[in-house]
Image (cartoon, rainbow, N blue to C red; front, side):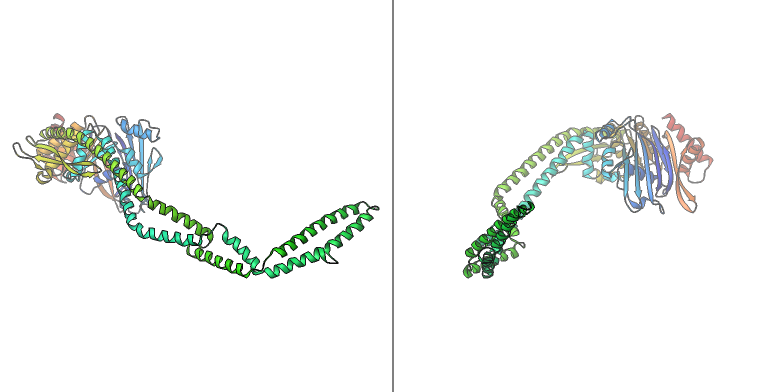
Length: 554
């Protein structure tokens, strides 16, 4: 139950607070006074998409806050608890809509997305508007009515999930087949790349090894001369470095008899001499090993050129070439397995199709049981709405498999006894649609839970005795649940437990909308104006008083 609604800077409402109680509450007022703004506000706190044009001109943001009593909404309470909310008997929902278009939602002070708010608030309120009359004539909405009456939410959800899985599986097959058609050229390219790389047969690190070898071969004469000179200078010449070090070491060793520290230096020089002689011998071996081989140099040049050509074509260096080869080989392997992969995808698609059809059959069985009972129940309600003899039937037809199964519902209607039924969209008047909608809402009331039921001018197209009947029916609906009705008919308004009036005026040069609760004479005056226009007369007041008295006695 909605206990309080606060609205700030929404359309022509600058600030408004509406406290609601149980039973039937009605809101009346002139066209354009702002009655529909209250519906907009409710839709926002229930997760509707925010529209920046709803923000009051000149304001940075609009804000709507609603306080709900969850006592009669166990399903909502359970849903909130499963989502991690610590829920008591009351719930505060707040929505902030900024002028530039961004919006924020809060559930008990916790930030939530619009989608999350819509999911969690389902069941807090049910909104029925004059636009829903047209929805009654749409096959999709008619099927939704059958599902609601059948209490098939779980099966409807399972059907939607199964069809989504089927759609995904179908797309996977179609995408694979499209890529398979395109893969002929791709396969040819991959095989060409593999042949090109394998003809050269590069090895990891080969370019670096060949670059080193090329450097030695290209400078073989110089390297030989340098290393031969090193061997000569260090070891073999008359004044070789090794011999010089040996002489100095010997003299220091002899002098160490007079100072021991010289002995340590002598040992260090001996160690240095060993190192010098090792370098000399290795230099000599290097000089004798290195080969000035023009033929090998040419081979290395050609090999490096081949590797560089591959690198330019496949990524810039030899590592990229080898990586390209590995990827091409893997992709070719996948292409070679495409028949196997295609078979797996087709099998998954066929399995998803069977699962979706199982879900659709389960849903159809539920709908078949519910369709007849729903038609009978609504027909019974129509009798109490002044449509004795009218008959409503719901038939199910085959339809292509989709997210709602493979059923199409059609609502058939006969306004008078003995007449054949015809499609509701072709035969029902606006007034009849209003009463049919109310009858359906009355039948579905128990299944829609104990939250707030909002009727936004569903009495369009009726008047007189029919309007009085509708008002009486709304009061019946409100006996065990909260109902809020926006109406322009006094015959409906007189049945309210609480009557609110919306009026607009000028404050500080700006149009503002105000809501006031009517009691006693103020309510009588409002009803009299609804009956006879702006000018109050004794006759219109007397007629209003009579309407009120009749409503209380009904």
